[in-house]
Image 1 (cartoon, rainbow, N blue to C red):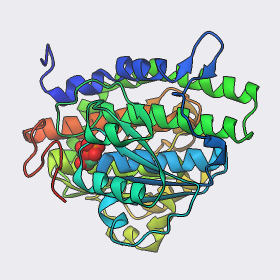
Image 2: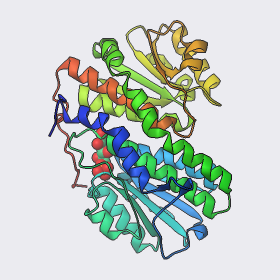
Image 3: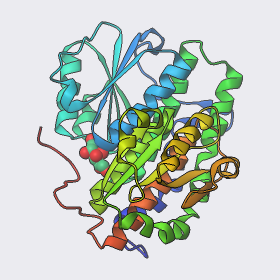
Image 4: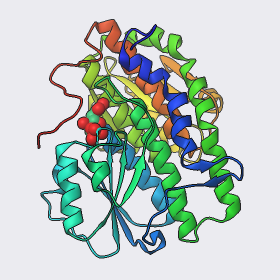
Amino acid sequence: EKGHFRHFMQKEIFEQPTVVAQTLRSYLRQVDQSLALPQVDFDLSRINRITIVACGTSFYAGMVAKYWIEAFARLPVDIDVASEFRYRNPVLEPGGLALFISQSGETADTLAALRHCKAAGQTIAVVVNVPTSTMAREADLLLPTHAGPEVGVASTKAFTCQLAVLAALAAHLAVKRGRMDREEEMEVVQHLLEVPASLNAALEHDEEIAAMAHHIAQARDVLYLGRGPDYPLALEGALKLKEISYIHAEGYASGEMKHGPIALIDEDVPVIVLAPSGPLFEKTVSNMHEVRARGGKVILISDAEGIAEAGEGCIATIEMSQVHPLIAPLVYAVPVQLLAYHVACLKGTDVDQPRNLAKSVTVE
Ligand code: F6R
């Protein structure tokens, strides 16, 4: 039931600190600050390549995972949307792990890709939210998210729980491959344990975000920009806005702006910049200045340090608490979800049942 919430989506956004903590509990051991992934009867240290396949929001979680797995475990990662993967005759060599991410565990294209990889001799890992689903049953390595039933058609809590599992998996692979020592493992665990509190802090921006939704609600087009692991977040922000408010939105890698999309910028196109302070901040800010120089109206989502440096001249800013770059994609998911949610409410759309969409896509 919805309780005191207006929509399931809103309830599910607010459940995130609880369900992410719940999910993390089965992948981390707090007592000795170590990773605790399910036991498997094959040797994960021998995996030589990872192929990630998913659709929609789950695909964006996979894009973040690619970044983490490459950075921590130094394993090459290939990623594709399921509907493309199946028809491009992918090269699947022995020693490969195929990783499927799905809330429902029933998405037809993802399931077909899973079966294709299985037939090609890949080891099958799945991150699913429905433990009784078909994908869960067909996996060699089952990595459940514990988000609880997700009712809103737009995925929210499943996404952050997927990221929590994928971060633990990336670090686990790094440990297995001798790329992460005990001290680094403890550090990663500590950062992950901070996630629920950081999600709570992010949710405190709810009213402030509701108050800025009017900047977006009147727009015809909206752009989202991000870099590195925050680029998939820009894609996710744009997808959330499209699906529930019916406003046209695009996510771009910040550095790609000048290769085309900057031609779209004028006073009528709000640009949402996701830029936690950190190693990629300066570059993203220079892309933001390019936008502003063309009259673009920027909403900057950053932390105190980032906003002090670059917030001036933005039409609005959302000041997040300072978080470690590892967990930023989880924490920055909250403001993009809330923004889409409040814009949709202003527009009066059916938030939980957007037109033309189904919760589980079981046709190819
Ligand atoms: C977006 C959304 C969809 C799903 C996609 C995959 O909010 O919900 O893009 O993420 O249909 O579904 P699952 O994860 O069930 O395979």
